Length: 154
Ligand code: SF4
Ligand code: SF4
Image (cartoon, rainbow, N blue to C red; front, top):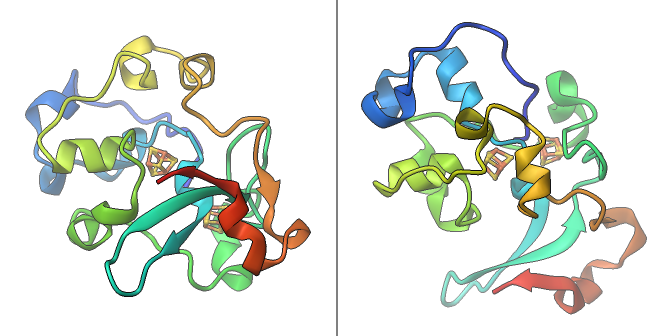
């Protein structure tokens, strides 16, 4: 779900005042901090529903920019990639990383200082060590049965 930056004008501090369901498309897209964490593979325990995050990245994730390399046509290659909306956030929040702005606002939390909307620069998500820049492994390099050796958040 890592998306390109959206240049359309946004209401000042909309993330503090506008409910998720009332945001414009531009505001919704701007909530994405570009961390790329949602493009990492997860391991879900079928019995407990517990989700562990791995450093094994979707085949389309660019390890340097943390963006999807084929965003507009990604579902041709990764049909299971979801498009998150205010209607579906409730069903996806459990597997999103705790840093994700969509999850945080859904849970009634603030977005952090390093978020580009607050810092004014996309670089801050990398400088804060939140993005996946430089430390993912492409999924085609590791057999699925070994993904549990690469868990980073449990
Ligand atoms: S296709 Fe992969 S890299 Fe692209 S947005 Fe979906 S999960 Fe992320
Ligand atoms: S985890 Fe959330 S904030 Fe980070 S890239 Fe994915 S949707 Fe955007």
